[in-house]
Image (cartoon, rainbow, N blue to C red):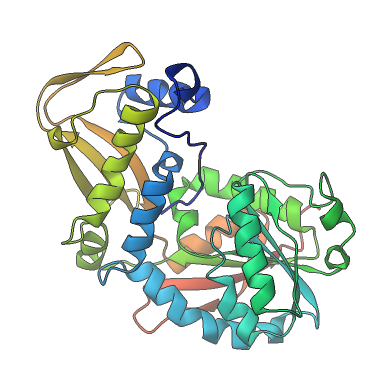
Length: 338
């Protein structure tokens, strides 16, 4: 699931202030399209982030549990592929939970640059990490991790840090790469290569689960947490865009699209209805859905094809016995441009 936070405003703000214009424009464009769709980045207000944390603790949600079990093994072997000293750059770093197994088991990491869109949250998490690993130079960088980022710009702390002189290891854990379409994933990987430089490494988490029952259960948990997470985007529109969605008239549905090899999350209208949002009327027919998120599942062959299309090549892959997840170590392809 994608963890890229969008701007969120408090519900008590006046209506003149409450409309986030980007959110409004994206919501109207998505809901007026055929088929209807919304960007998953709008899941992540404070309430949505809380639900996602709960999802990660569910028995059914294998990606988080599997990766956290796999990462210590990866970290112990990772140093054998890296220079003696390296700076790790984590994209979409969030709360900095997944970097900890690498730091605990890989002595090659001397610098850490976490990138996330939320500056305050990132600074707080970075300070806590620096306390836990006092030998580590932690220099947070606020920005949109899907775009190329000049690590030396607009940050005196970063520009003056010696971590910039070290070779770089990109880190993109979780299954967030699966939230991008293949074309978007290729664009992200190309942009990451620009951020990291031509002499870099990249550790990429990829969901490789192919068991249909496991996939269904992971996105349709018995407690209904994923349903609450999905419907939270409707609550956000009610609160921030003066919409009037009745959550009880929409059903959470996660389905596997065989031809695209992806789980799709939808909110399905139980009846024909009209919704108002920022003064505009949006019509729904019975059974019509809002497509809220994709989660692509990659076979090893598809992973190789994806990263090679973006100018990277696979040098090693770690996979648990059940084959449900992979950590893939990449280096820039030798025949690619800088």
